[in-house]
Image (cartoon, rainbow, N blue to C red):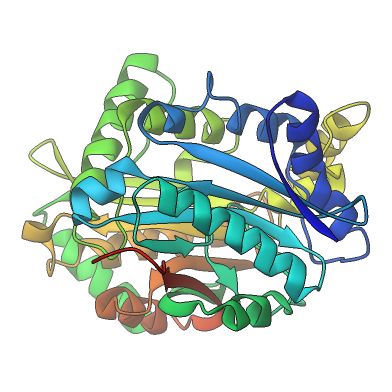
Length: 379
């Protein structure tokens, strides 16, 4: 018998957070998140997402054993921008049992329906600004920082329930090496024209850092506003993201393009701290912090998380210059980076997919977003 229980207290929440540790205990590709970070993420007093949207977490039990979990959430900002009624689900984890999966999906769907939504979309934890998408290939590879991972059998669990593909999110992989010579020549030529400048993030002066962060926020909000699934972040949400990333960023791998002092482009590349997290196994204590210090300078991979140029400045080669600079810094860095991931890129983003290919990158992972119309809702 399957029983679905709403998470209502700290004890339930801890079970929700720790369930994947049981599910993936023999899966060498999975990367355990820090339990302390998860507690913060699900704390309404610390995560600004809860200020504008609602969330409900569910646990699934079978014969009194915990066998699955899921979240259901509204996304007020998404529905305001896209003028639709989509409810989201995420943090889906379960044993390989269609009956359990159906019970979890039913619980999420019922909750989303009661919130007045006509479609459920996911997985998104909690939105596309967080980790999202179901991995549908390359299950033998660990996820890069801030990307998802799941067993292959999830695909059938989703599709058997009636979910349909909404959008594929592509991840490209490239060797860290000098950019193609033709691209380097083009980049040098573009930069010599002097129509714009590209510089690194300023971190030594707190006031200058704050100014740069505000520029990054403005570019992100503007450059991505027309993208599929785009959801604006509140200033508080952006600040929380920045606070979580500042300890792991490398300023030399973050570039801001400017014209007459105005920020017009942005490129953010992060070291793959999942390499370190995998060693820490979800805990800072008693020895997790030592592993953090030991392995943080041995990270083999990078992830190009953001690369965007404001619409009115596209076609000037600003993106080419930022990509070439990123490759040059990565290749000559004291940390022995060997490979880079460009992710995620919408399958429909022709320009970004073309740029990735030009950089000799190849699609090596695909993440899928799914939709399902909710029955009984009048359109």
